[in-house]
Image 1 (cartoon, rainbow, N blue to C red):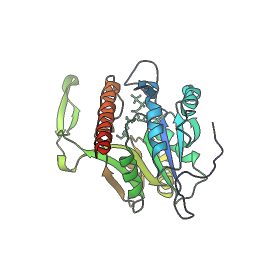
Image 2 (cartoon, rainbow, N blue to C red; image 1 turned 180 degrees about the vertical axis):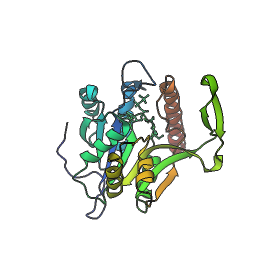
Image 3 (tube, rainbow, N blue to C red; image 1 turned 90 degrees about the vertical axis):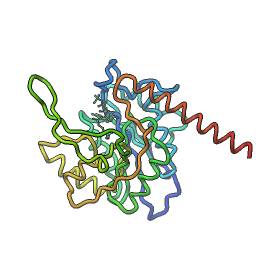
Image 4 (cartoon, protein in one colour; image 1 turned 45 degrees about the vertical axis):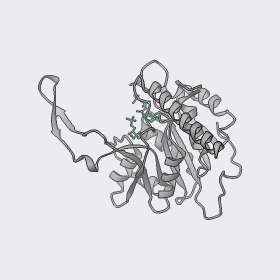
Length: 266
Ligand SMILES: Nc1ccn([C@@H]2O[C@H](COP(=O)(O)OP(=O)(O)OP(=O)(O)O)[C@@H](O)[C@H]2O)c(=O)n1
Ligand SMILES: C[C@](O)(CO)[C@H](O)COP(=O)(O)O
């Protein structure tokens, strides 16, 4: 599906960069199992995918949203985004065989944009992303070419190596204060991501689990800024994660309800 674009959302001036958000939904959810991609699982009355797309559509900074869906389920994704509050979706396109290939497909979908325009890449598997996190990511792109959102690690994170007989051995304990757990969205000035991917895709040894890592590796001179993520911005990965997301959504609704009630009482 490719929708003819009308006026961009938000109050775009001539010099304001256009902001496209791409929802990466090309994965099959092997760790979740169950035979269907996890982004199609139900979560509080909507699919996981719909939550992620709706969050980006609701962000005033985002002008349009492109969905990159696993090829076998393209029609389902099109049906989902036909929902009333998802009017910013400009295209539903097939993803790639790897997350990196899906990011490259997102870049191809915005080939007509300027180098100074912005692209946010967001996991469809992170349905609880908040407006504040999206906003923080876009705001940082005013002074940085690449921005990731991350949270500190409460646990000590260690590096292990294979030991004898299938065991694992501790290899290193990096200082926790400098460790973060990376999330999405990750945002980029298009020129930066284009240059990074041009080099990355020419590298037969390319393996990447996120896009800020691609910029760090292939454009070593480029600053990759890290801004505050959100503990609730979990990635649905394993069985049980949808149930955790349900609880977090209920807590969020409770907080919003309590704030609304307090406002009404004033
Ligand atoms: N070929 C791929 C692989 C992953 N993703 C997306 O990247 C995000 C994070 O990846 P992950 O949690 O690994 O999702 P899956 O690849 O679906 O899961 P698994 O690794 O368990 O198969 C997800 O929104 C997933 O749909 C993608 O767009 N294209
Ligand atoms: C991009 C990401 O969500 C940051 O935490 C993560 O690296 C995706 O990794 P996955 O292996 O594709 O789940």
